[in-house]
Image (cartoon, rainbow, N blue to C red):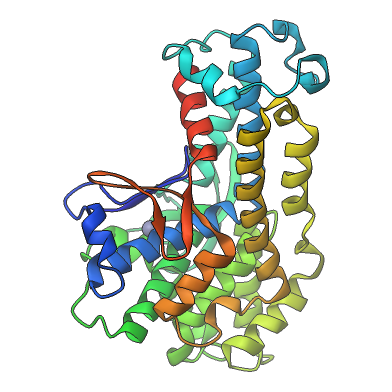
Length: 380
Ligand SMILES: [Zn+2]
């Protein structure tokens, strides 16, 4: 099964039994399986890193990666970790190459480890696929709040009576699944199906099942279920607290006041409803941080590749803020996917037999993935 790996933001098409080679990928968009799988993972990448939580996490990880390299080559003293080391070191160092020449775990005992551990835990929490035991009295598909890893999360109770938090992965999965189903319709991929099972039901389609409940029927017509799920997910991920935003929007959908029925009117009304919770500052901060933070010490060629990559992710967030019905406007055709690739770019893609150079108009951007991969390697 193809997979989006959050630790080094790579779309891995070569994993497991349903794996794809470079040749399989070159048969897109005619072949249903690689096309559906690739688009699903691509949406994952866009939405996970185009989210406020994902963008913040990524920005912090870049800092940690650069500081690790500076520590390993003794460009900064160990006690400089908390400050802004960029101004104290010779600029334009080949950070990725510095990390690459050090062995696995070389930075494991360095003072940056504490910051890395908390990012590691945060990443595991926001990108986790897990559900948790639920001991409360709510019935299934009810939205409830529960403590997960020291933090309260909104989520829902599954049929097996588990608590499924509305974390970034849950929301990105539901959005990716609803969008890949739109692609399936537009491309006429009738034979393609995802394996049925608990994950498919509770995780990938969980929000859909919540929205099917009668309390939302006033605002959610059955034919728009998938599109309204996409709108909810896109808006939630553009806020600082996606779980709370999703709960808030679901409450608004349960209200008897109409939201206009069509996905586009629902999107506009919910955008107004969320109000100040939606703003571009976090996305802009990511760009600001790379210019002013530790990454300023990076060799210009490496820096520019990463900077351009982050600008693409900033565009995803800003597009949704500008137009929350962007992803449900018109059919999800392959041409449409190609326009996203042109606009939002592409991260590193690997197939079962090696790296994928490009998909459609977009070359795989590898610098950021290589930086993160090397940082995880020396830090763990
Ligand atoms: Zn997925």
